Length: 102
Image (cartoon, rainbow, N blue to C red; front, top):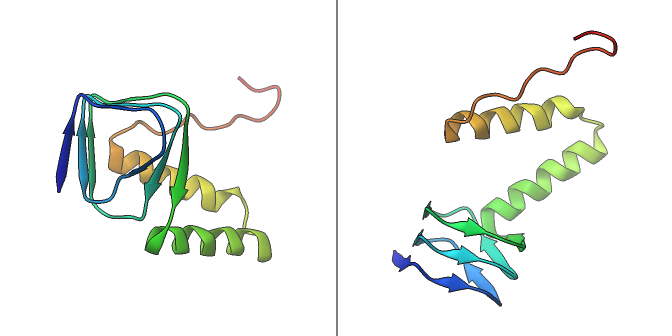
């Protein structure tokens, strides 16, 4: 695993899989991620584009097809977001309320 410290990534494509980034800045780059191990600490992200390839890209493509072809509702998206928040230690999003209720 390569370790990058206090580096500015300002153009091109940055391969994330198998790397660690500490105190780095990302702006005007494409972040390429295929689902491998990656570490971030104290990093700052400006305008970036994401490219998902490999097994992760295939899985996301399959989910998109399921969502479109079989009319899966937002519940799938909500479930995946909750899973990501739980893994990241982020509190769950507030529940939506019906119109006129507070």
